[in-house]
Amino acid sequence: MSFSAQASIPDARDALRAQGFYQFPTLHEADICQTITAFMDGHQADARTHFYYGQTEMRIWEAHERHPALGQFFEECHAFLGRLEGKADPVTLLAIRNRPLLAGDEASALGRWHLDSLRRQLKIFLFLNGATELSGPLELLPGTQRPSFKYGHLATGAFGMPWDFAPGRARRYARLDDMWVERLTAGQHPTTPVVCPPGTAILVDTSAIHRARPCVEGSRYALTAYYR
Figure 1: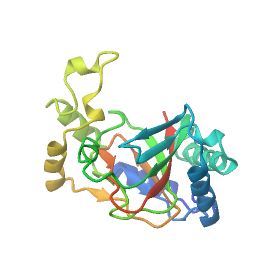
Figure 2: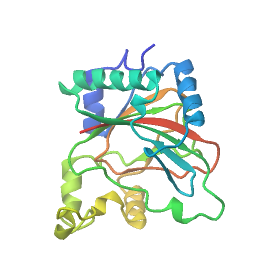
Figure 3: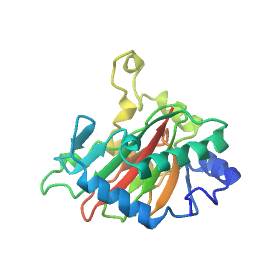
Figure 4: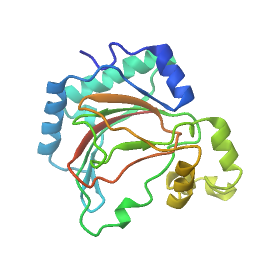
């Protein structure tokens, strides 16, 4: 069954407004998820393949162009967002594989919390082999997607100073201070890790504070559909 077949548009809108994410009620087909993970393991790196965190993270860009199953998933994402938003403005599909960080690589565990944008921005994630507490689950701070939260903290400089927003400058919100986020999670915005079975899809407003938790055991295979 299609992962979006039983999705409720009103429920998705309410969940995005309240907590910044919506988990689809139907799992994606197991055989398709396994086909995609096998494709990723057999992928030969090219100019659109990037590695991070001591080569433990592989990112395959424009993944929808590389295998029919990936193209079909991307098209299904378009169809759902068309129902939700009235249109879909796609950018790309990313396929990502995480393996455990190398022993002693403490630096790769830091600097992961971020926002994708200060404005509302939607992405659809598919966790092909699921996610455990140790395999690097997506983590979010529900409620931090709300304009009142973002603009309140923008005024304090937490997301950047005025000069950071000049063309060509790095955005401070793209790499948030870990200790600052820890204070938020200890207060009114406890973190929500997406621990889930294989085939779970989730719609996220990535203007919320989020990260991929470092993988320390097992592996995580996921897709991310990007939209403007």
